[in-house]
Length: 325
Image (cartoon, rainbow, N blue to C red; front, side, top):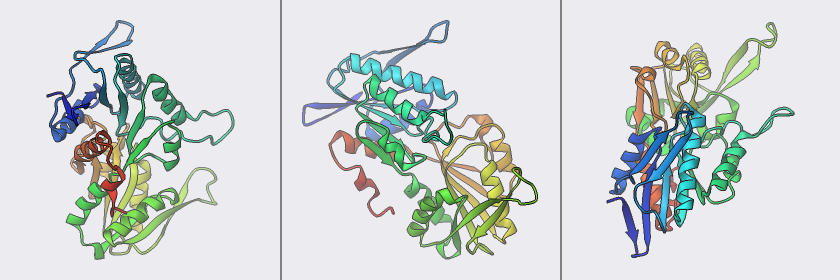
């Protein structure tokens, strides 16, 4: 069955790009439907071609794509999928991007710079998307970039429940790796009933523009510290933050993040670090060469499926996080 009908009128159809097919299949399994058969081709000059093998007319279409490396290719493929749905008369199109590419480029830091995050959301709107769904956007303001409804989902309940099952809250300190993530860390602390700390980075006055001194604000001595962030890219910031925590007497450090980008040296850095475990969700595919012994991957598929079902039935996505802090 490739679709779900509601009240004999609406029909849900699920579509998946080629960058994380397992996640799309997992979401489909949670919903009890099949992924709509799609033909993908690549022309000799690398142009992408998409054609759906079933009628999508009048459907409530949900298009899942992970914006994984190569990011530009992933985004372009999803844009073409949306365009094909629009031209085939889908009634409503929801772009599901567990990890939204270019979200870190959400503001201008200096003159003559782009705001690429806004550009990407504009492209999806132009292609024909009516709605956008994403998990743990880099900043909340990105919700205002898309000219339409945005469902901003949070992985905190999934990650926090895992940590809570391993550690006693009385021994845990939630740590933000920098001042910019204090709000996220505060939500974690509230949910787990744990103490809170953050790492303050300042320039070393003796070595200009090169080395930063990490100062821990909060009690971490003898504690199990959980470093929380929205993503892990190269792993440099997280490893340095963990080292600072150990210098201040932390007993152990666990890293918890939603998106495992794990670029370049990240896997080796984290495996070789003093961190005991790195917990992420599967918003992005982790190829074998980026996996390592300390890595734990939790499934985001049940959350996505519940959110899609709420959107399809005109329910409340917010209700999924009631009481989740």
